Length: 290
Image 1 (tube, rainbow, N blue to C red):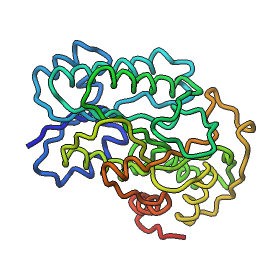
Image 2 (image 1 turned 30 degrees about the vertical axis):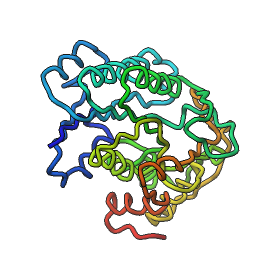
Image 3 (image 1 turned 135 degrees about the horizontal axis):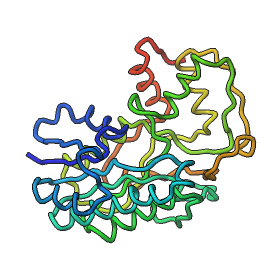
């Protein structure tokens, strides 16, 4: 039996892993949140690893509020950088394989082609910078690591764009959504399955990987699909980013190339709208494809 530590245990991605791992009887998953393990405190992390035996550690803990990270960079730094560093070093000391979750926001969005893992990074804001520094802390801290960059994560768990749109559908008649930021929505259930594949196959194909669902969408396209599939009568208006100023600047184009993960780990990736249908059916059982 393999023991797997999952940090950020009450969060969206950890909840998706818990759902997907429910039938993996040959693996024991331990989900911890900050009330049990504060990853920003090295002494606490080291003591936790000393008293427990793990084969894998999946770091789902993160400071993910993109706009607030501009004014709370010290907090984002502690969680996204120090936390990753502490876990990576503990994994190295105890021969534990480490899976670190990162983001498409490590890129500046100036590319016209989907980003490869080796493409130059240049984050536009504090969130992307702290996640990039967390990647480097992972690389420096432990040899046996996987870094998975993902994008626009949503699911039936936690707070996310999909659930916000469904709430707006009940509260409003019309909505303006940015149409000039392009990326790919990623269903948390699909990402969880990829993480579990790495664990169950005891992969040693370490390195940086990109994972999102297939296809390309703007935030407007994503919202339109949510409203269409859930049969909402919402009037949706496309706007440019400058019409909706935010504290943090976001990449205009953050589509990632998934060729590496498909080739190396033999991962099959669903189209984003197909996965959205699955998620919406779980959130609203009577939802049908529009």
